[in-house]
Amino acid sequence: MALLYTNENFPQPAVVELRRLGHDVLTTHGAGNSNASISDLEVVQFAHAQNRVVVTLNRRDFIKIHRSGLPHSGIVVCTVDADYIALAARVDGALADRDLSGELVRVSRGSSRPSSAPNAVGVVSSD
Image (cartoon, rainbow, N blue to C red; front, side, top):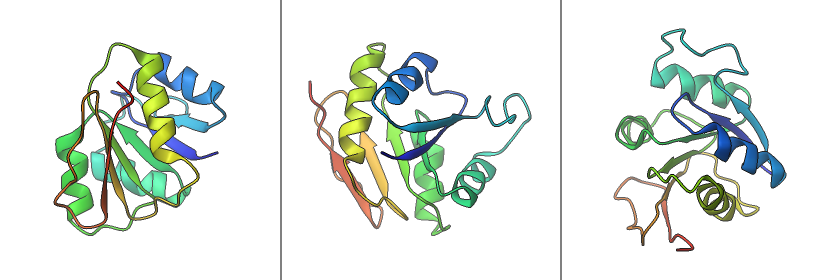
């Protein structure tokens, strides 16, 4: 399964479900980076140094980072969904034995659109 790094805005219940699904999930809190004013750029750099895919609800800022061409181990941007089990299942489906290095994946509750960003992959949700 995948090595993941979730930032502060990603819901803990979805983290728990991703772990139950077999993913190795490191949270911002677990890494000692919560409430430390770590920039989004530093989040990506930290995750990349550990070969982890960033998983976040902060679509706008992380898509900008992807578009900047900064090397990363993958970025998964998700829409907000209070059904944390379904959110985790969609993230799990998007990861499905793929190397996401340098790629952007959009995971949404409804149908998703391909990103205009280079190396982006659109993911259709299971709803």
